[in-house]
Image (tube, rainbow, N blue to C red):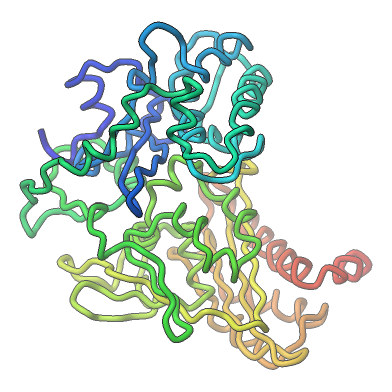
Length: 450
């Protein structure tokens, strides 16, 4: 069995655990959702994932939970019972994924709220019941969870028959697993989360020799030293969302996260993978371009993120190089930041155009600026001239009007399935206005009158 085999195929075809369904194979529908348990800070921490995009090798030393692993011996568990009593299933194809994701919420040590419970299934799609019955079932389960208080999540879930008792012994079992394994050769393709590779190259990558880096602890973590934030290349979107550093400096982060994929994908997707994927509309490529992030390769070479992209899917990177860490200067108290995105769906969709806007101020004047935009060039674009123009300016209607002219001269969008070139130009203009209005709310009235 190759480590590049998808976990979904291993589960269904080699373990005959067919409760995990094959749906889109692109991480969108959630029918193949599983839970991944990993020891962190001496506790087993669970996160939902889409098994159709997960390399089997990334399951090494993890507790992989399918719907079968959530069954009690003689009756439905608490989540299954709530779905049955509220009529929250019809054809049943999507139901295992919903059950798995919601059980993941129940055994996660985090905020307990109805909104959090609903968010836990934001990567699961139901095509036949509608969602009100599912919401009622979720509310029933959340009502139980509200009694948890400060108690251990797994112990509470076992006591309330949400998960089977064997979960209590998982940490001991994981600690005694063999740590050695056969590593791929040095010429193997490097894979982290795999959330894009397994969509774009599904027919070929499952037969390839791959080198997985998700198990490397030295490529994980978010630290701050001398005002510089450093992240390991294996840092996931969820790691950023949960990071006290990012929460402190980017208080609007929860709003941005709602625009970026589903919970399952955030749990798997790495920031370095987003960079190397080199999609012109990569959300976090745009986010960190505006912050003038630096990347460091495994050989010690460091380069600004903005210089990584030489052309469409062409990188300033040698085949043997991979990103080890990402760093950026933490903003001081004078900074303002905003991220905007337009896509066909409000949430969890690929961008037509996205943009990040970063400024530092000295009094009323901008002392430093970074503007990035996606979907308007062959690469994730850092708008050099537009950023330079803002230095020494005020955030005003006049500045915005002049900036829009420079922005339009600096971009070169093309027409594709996400919109015409003219439409993308219009979108970016609107996003620039949204940045200004977000940072200076009273400007909205001025723009309306202008």
